[in-house]
Image (cartoon, rainbow, N blue to C red):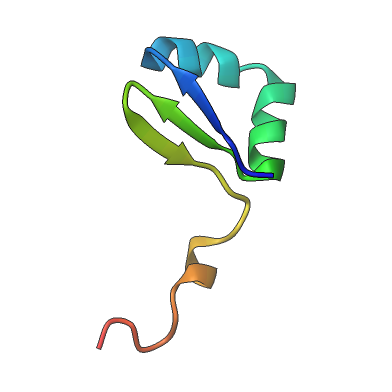
Length: 57
């Protein structure tokens, strides 16, 4: 399940992500995180997998 976690500051987010279990959970679940109004999405997927050949044409 994808859900959103909220952090007021970048420092709060970074401190929380330094805990290995938290970071692993975020990447495994592809959880979205809101940090000071900006939504961050984490994933294990390679960037290249998201690009289809011919998109640049």
